[in-house]
Amino acid sequence: MISDAFEPYLLRTFISVCQHGSLSGAAQQAGRAQSALSAQIRRLEELLGQRLLRRTGRGVVPTTEGELLLTYATRILALGETVAARLKERTVMGNVRVGLSEDVAVSALPAALGRLRRACPHVHLEVVVDHGDALADRWNDGELDVAIGVSSSFNADPVHAWNVELYWVCAIDEEIDAALPLDVIVYAEPCAWRRLMFDALLNAGRDFRVTVTSPNIGVITAAVEGGLGVALLPAENIRPETMRIISLAESDGPILSVNYGLYAVPRQSDSIRAAVELLTESFHAMTQPLR
Image 1 (cartoon, rainbow, N blue to C red):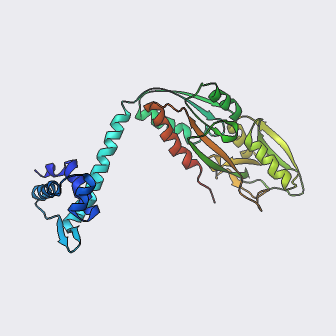
Image 2 (cartoon, rainbow, N blue to C red; image 1 turned 30 degrees about the vertical axis):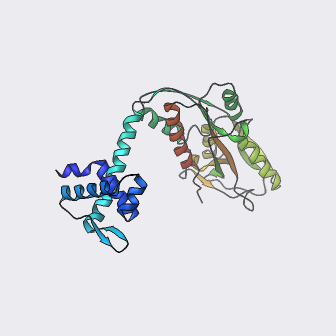
Image 3 (cartoon, one colour; image 1 turned 180 degrees about the horizontal axis):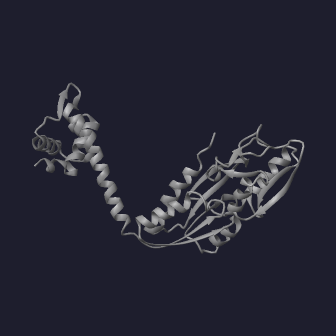
C-alpha cells in the first residue's frame, strides 16, 4: 500500500541519503550497513511505484519524483513531531508560580500564559504581578518558579535576557513647547524606567516637571492619551491611533533601553519548562523595534 511508504523510518532513510548524496555516507552516519539502507530505498520505490534516486559519478541524487517526495517527506516528519509534542504537552501537569513585572504584565506575556493553559490544561498557574524590587524579593524568598523583571533588580543569572527599547511618546494631537518645562508621566519608585527618564532629561539639560505618578502602566498610558504629558513606553504599549513617538533627550544619543531577564528555578518540572519556552517566545516579540 502507498500509505506504507510513509513509514517514518523509510522517509528518514530517504532524506538522509539525499542529504549525504550517497548510501555509504548515510549508512556511516546512521551506524548501519549500506545494504540495509539500500533495501529500504528499494522498498520505498516499490511502494510508490517510482524511481526516487539516480546514480551520478559522485553518488546519488533524487529524481524529479524523488525531489517531490523529499519536500513532502520533510513536512510529514515535521508534522509528526509537532503532533507528538502537542500530545505530550497535554499530559504535562503540576503547579507553576509565575511572577511578572507590572510594566510587562499587560503585554504579550499573559497571552503566552493563556496558550500554556490551553495546551496544558492540567497545569495550574499562579501568577503574581508586582513592581521590580518587590518581584525580586519574592524570587529571593523562593515564592516563584519563573519570574520576568528588570535585570538590575535581581541578584541572579537569567535563563534569557533581552533589551527592551523605550520610546518617548505623547498624545497624538499634543504639541511640545520647547520653551516650557516638559510635563512628564512617570512610574512610582522604585522603577528603572523612571530613573532612565530622569537621567536622560538631566543629561540633555531639559527642564521638566512631573504631572502624573502611578505604579500602574494602564494609568500611565491613559494619562499619555489624555494629553497630560510625555512618558517612556515600550513598543508593545504604544497605541498609534492615540499616541505618537517624539524625539527628546535621546535624539542625539543611543536609544533608551532596559534589560529584562527571565529567571527560572534550576530544577525544572515539565510544566515549568513549558512556561519558560512560551514566555521566552512572547518576550522576544516584545523586543522588536518600531524604527
